[in-house]
Image (cartoon, rainbow, N blue to C red; front, side, top):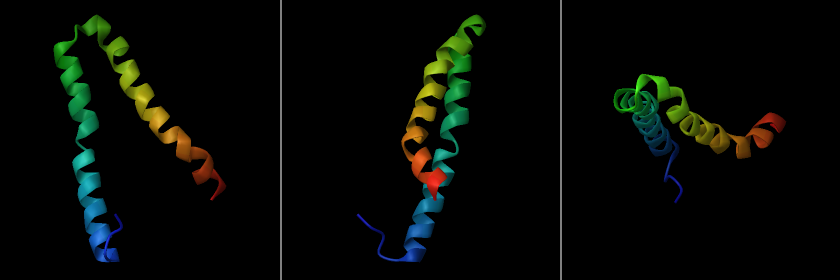
Length: 65
């Protein structure tokens, strides 16, 4: 569904960015709290790998723009 106007789009995008801005620090803190210290890196590796793979499909498009 497209936004009905540019101001609505910008407000929705800003709200989305503000909400998502808390996901990464909260996730890392949660994993750091529940996983033993010697296994934190191993537990966070899939989390960061998935984030990188989520950006990879748009990288060639963004690089050519």
